[in-house]
Amino acid sequence: MIIIGVENMHKYCFVFALGYLTVCQITRVYIFDYGQYSADFSGPMMIITQKITSLAYEIHDGMFRKDEELTPSQRDLAVRRMPSLLEYLSYNCNFMGILAGPLCSYKDYITFIEGRSYHMTQSGENGKEEVQYERTEPSPNVAVIQKLLICGISLLFHLTISKTLPVEYNIDEHFQATASWPTKAIYLYVSLLAARPKYYFAWTLADAINNAAGFGFRGYDRNGEARWDLISNLRIQKIEMSTSFKMFLDNWNIQTALWLKRVCYERASLSPTIQTFILSAIWHGVYPGYYLTFLTGVVMTLAARAMRNNFRHYFIEPLYLKSLYDVITWIVTQIAISYTVVPFVLLSIKPSLMFYSSWYYCLHIIGILVLLLLPLKKTQRGMNTQENAQLFRSKKFDEKEISLGQNSFSTTNSVCNQNQEKAFRHSSLKQ
Image (tube, rainbow, N blue to C red):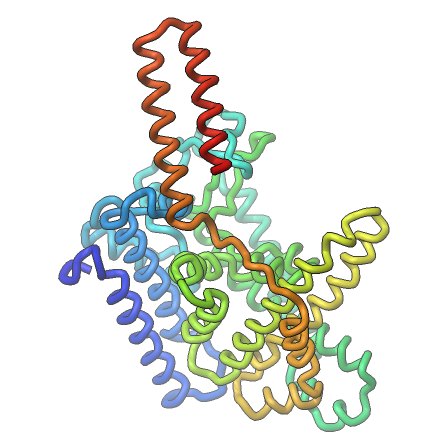
């Protein structure tokens, strides 16, 4: 970071950190314990890789790129000065997230360390300022206790029910030969549902550890209640009730999804979805099952997007039709997710292909047919550079004009000028 300079250091840091992580993964898998899904040195290395690359991109955005070139999220997270060695090591190696994360932005971490997280102005979901309350330092006790209860339930579920519903039974020869298709689909869903609590336990515990140290405070909701979900990694209810592939991914391993979005998806010029899934596979490790899962995920994501764009608007009203649509999409989403992630659990190529062949690659075929037959609308990945620059200049112009108006004219003329400025801004936005 020091030698290369802010212009290109994000690229070098990205390649070096990800390459070093890959060497660690290869060493662990093919030298130490092939087939053993264990938490060892490569786990913390995965988190540190996210932190190193995130910070490099944030410094590049803050110290090299112009503000009008940045998306709103990039502008908010941009780091305007090089961190000291102590700040850098503290961010990467602090005790709260060294083992299991979750990832946090450098600015959020430094704000917490400097004690400013309880005095910041928080904005609402639609960008409007929320009702302000007295900014006393809130207690994390309630949030920590709630999350520890979730940890206990998840751990109990994993140690009991998960053991009786192994994912490997999906490729059992007797089961494949005798089970009906509904039975296969139901067991597929239930076995993958039973495999999730260990992730719920680990991520919720990691979140609780950060909260117990005072980190993770997001602000206050409209009722004045403290929110401790700044770095939460999952939303269990939304995961289990997902009615679309995107909804599931948006609520599962949230901080990793944000990392992938910030360092890859928003910056990719060609096939951002494919590049993002490939990066996710490389980051997870070198097991073939990871690549099968994420390549399948590309097909499923694009097919689900095409289906949603082409059919969802027909089922918005009346209410019973929307409810029926939600039920059907929930079933399809849960089966598609389970079908996609089986290789992620099985790890090896042979059992993974055995599973897909037992299903005759049906969801792969359906997904490809959907992509071939339905028009795929382009999704907006945020404003492009030209639009962003135009709005940025318009905003600066408005601020300057308002300032001049307040200093030079009377109250009546100021009101007139502000009305003209609003009209100008609206016309600029339309253009």
